[in-house]
Image 1 (cartoon, rainbow, N blue to C red):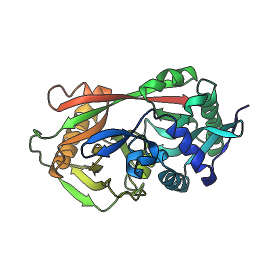
Image 2 (cartoon, rainbow, N blue to C red):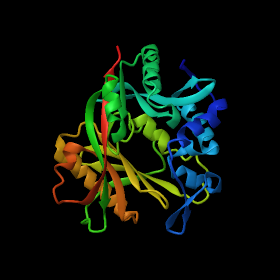
Image 3 (tube, rainbow, N blue to C red):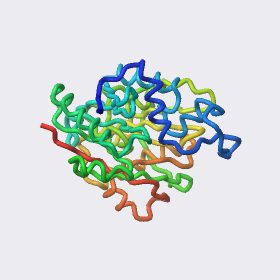
Amino acid sequence: MIEVREASLDDVEDITEVHKSDVKKWYRVVGSELIEADYDELTVEERWLHGGQWMSIETCYLHIKSFLEAGGRILVAETDNRIVGEIEFITDREPSPYLDHAEIYVLMVHRDYRDRGIGGKLMQSVEPYCDEMGFSRILLSSEERSIKFYYKIGYELFEEHETILVDLRKLPKIKVNYEPLTRITSDDVADKLLIIGRFHNTIATLYNIKDIFPFERMIMKYFHFKIIDKDKEHVLVIRKSNMINNSMYYWLDSRIEGKKEILHALFKALYLARKLGISKILVGLRKDLIDLLDNELNYKSIEKIPWFIKEVC
């Protein structure tokens, strides 16, 4: 019997165990190399590198507390008096085409309990919450290994995105009219579209760029900008890190027209990243936009990020 209930901070240790089960081997960072090691030998930062905030009790506690405070919801699946899966979701209201929706932030089932319907049960359990909150659609971005699963439970392909790693070292100089910002809030991007760097929806992305993890070795610094382009204003956040890939999150004025104008805005953002001393940066971009890049950028594809949708009422 699988039972699904709301999670609490008392579940942190069990949720961590669920996520740790997905890691086959653990590695320490020694200089510039990764050396195989036992979990107990790793620092909190090294554990985080294997899958994020869920990999240590310390960071998982901070995440769950902050995620719930940000308006997110967390459900856990139990069987045999043991937590064997969890799902996190958060609601947002964005301009078209995303509109009002709940986004699945993460879904994880313990390795020893997969292929028993637990993931489907957790996904189905989100739907009554959407009905209760007045949201009629669920959106999510998927890893390639999970695509068949989402089709199986009734989701449809919504948008095709892809992560590319852009080499900025030969990027030509571009004129950019911008203002540095100390931070951004949901009000700053309320009428804007998160088109570039859409790994999550707006609310989840704003949550991700909050500095809530007290790392000692890992530095993640966020730079915030307003970019003025004629009569339009865009909002850009660039993450610069010493241990993980640099990346960007870019909200464009919803009045932006056409793919060429979007790519024009992208090049301005890339040039700002170069001015920050970044040589390579991860960019999440719609597949149809990548197809137009031709030889204008030096980049390589990293992974596909298909977005799925399900209308629930």
